[in-house]
Every structure is written in structure tokens, then in C-alpha cells.
Image 1 (cartoon, rainbow, N blue to C red):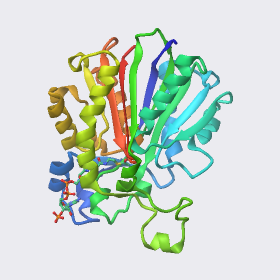
Image 2: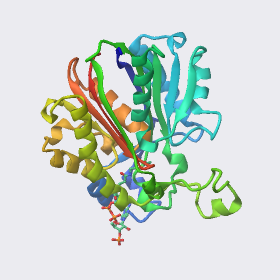
Image 3: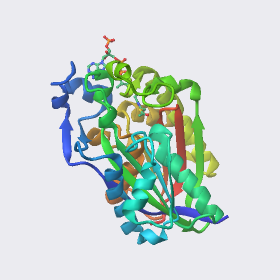
Length: 328
Ligand code: ACO
């Protein structure tokens, strides 16, 4: 089997910045509560006419330019999203058309906040086995569209953005070194959008009950994340045949600064080795890890040959980690 790696990366964040002070107008909360409990100071909010594919398109174009590939080069497009433009057609098919990637297969991947890391694992499988040469993996979210702006337990946490990567072949031992994917379906009710599917089709009643909005048991998800993250990071490191000290930079899902701090402490790693941008974007679900990776690269925090561990967790419950030797 050949190796696979990230040949190019891109991102997009909407222009509109929503600071915590604005949320004080909608729900009974304060800037101080949000900052101390979550680390979030502001988030980006998509314009009313912007859907997830609009954000994903910009991220995809940047990733393709960075990788030096054309639409004709792309064999497969995977979009990780919890907020597709619609139930079907897949947001990946909408992107395939708008990019003009006529030779590409396209599908969406649904693993909530873990979708993008799940997606790069799938892309690695395709590229390393020779089934594909060039795979575009996009994480695109407009969580503001499924947020109940009257629920202070959730509306302060989320934001909108998109990240994308182009996965291409590389020498074995370079690029992706390991993957670890996990799920616990019994925890599904902890983060849920109940209505609009086949179990509870949209109706006046579901709208009245607010069942087309994301609902979350924050405290239980917090406990799950703190327990699981160190285990998932260690698993990716072990499977790569490395030690935790060999990792130059950790790129965790940006959900809550206290969750990241707890993971650093449990792993006995300095907090500076964890990239953080939750203060500026909040939790952007599947876009969170690729946007953080993009920023870390642009900020010069990751150099050719460095090892990074990507870590995502979210609804499902799902989690995913991977060790990556940066080759760009
Ligand atoms: N402002 C003020 N008070 C609030 C707010 C708010 N925005 N939200 C909750 N509170 C109150 C609660 O009502 C509660 O009051 P009470 O004690 O009178 O009942 C108190 O603050 C403490 O509530 P907790 O839920 O215990 O607060 P906690 O410290 O756990 O923080 C939070 C809540 C931020 C949601 C945290 O639990 C968390 O980050 N959980 C993880 C969420 C997450 O990571 N989700 C990722 C997956 S999302 C996906 O997949 C799409």
C-alpha cells in the first residue's frame, strides 16, 4: 500500500462576527459566563442566503489551489456535515457541480463533529489502496441554521465555517501514520436534532416543539469528551508506533477550552502543544479541525516533517483521531 497525505488545505469563515455581548440580548447569559465556562469570545455567522455548500465551495477552491490540482483531477468528493444544504441531494454533489469536477464521485458523510476526520480516514483508504488518486474532503457547517436562539445551553456554543483538504498519494511512512475511529450509538440522544427525518417528519407540531433545532445534554457530553479525548489521542499515537512526546502539535476539536485543558493535563502535555481557536469561532462541528489545522499551518506552527495528531468528537456519539506527518 502506498501512503497518503494532505497535499493542500483551505478554509472559509463568514464575515459576520457575533460577539458574546450580542447573545446577552437573546438569552439570560453574560460574556463572563461564556468566557469562563467555554473560552468562546465570538463566533462567525453565515448570511441568511449562505448554505453550507457556499462555505464549503470557498474552502475547497483554496485547498485545490494550495495542492495545485484542477477540478478534472478530483476522483472523489466527501463532504462531512451535520447541516447539509438539504436532506438530498448530497451537499457533495452540489459542490461537485459547482466546482466542475465532472469525473468525481460525491457523497456526504454524517458523523456530526467527527465527520471531517472520518472523511480523511475514508480518503486515506481510497488513495492508499489505489482506488483514487485525488480526494477532496470538506467539512462545512452552518450550525446557526439549526440553533435555537432561545436556548442558552446551546446557542452560545456554536458557529459557522468550512475547511477542506486535498488527499493525494505519498511515500509510506509519510503523511497519515494512523487512524482510530469510534462510536457509541447508545449516547445518541445526548446530541440530537429530533425532527425532519423519517422517525419524526417535519410537521406544525415538531416546529412548535422546537424539534428542528439541535438539542444537547452539555454536561454529559462534557464528561464523555474529557474521558475519551486522551484515550483517542493515545490510541492514534500508539497505532503510529510513536510516543506522546513525539507529537509536535495537537489539533483537537474546538468545543470548549476547558475540555482541551483537561486533555492536556491528563496526557501530561504542555498546553502550548494544543492549537486553540475556539475563542474566535466557537464550535463549528466538522469544520472545526480542518480550520484549526489550516490556521496552525499558516501561523507556522507546523513544519515539514512535524507530527500532528488530529482529534474530533461529537454527536453519535462519535470520535476520530489520526497521526499525521506533515509533508507540505
Ligand atoms: N449562560 C448562563 N448560564 C448558563 C448558560 C449560559 N449560556 N448555559 C447554562 N447555564 C447555567 C445552567 O442552567 C446551570 O444552572 P443551574 O446550576 O442553575 O442549573 C449552570 O449554568 C451550570 O450548567 P452546566 O451545564 O453544569 O455548565 P457546564 O459548566 O457543564 O457548561 C457547557 C455547559 C458549556 C455546555 C459544557 O457542558 C460543555 O461544553 N459541554 C460539551 C459540549 C460539547 O462539547 N459539544 C460538542 C459536541 S456538539 C456536536 O457534535 C454538534
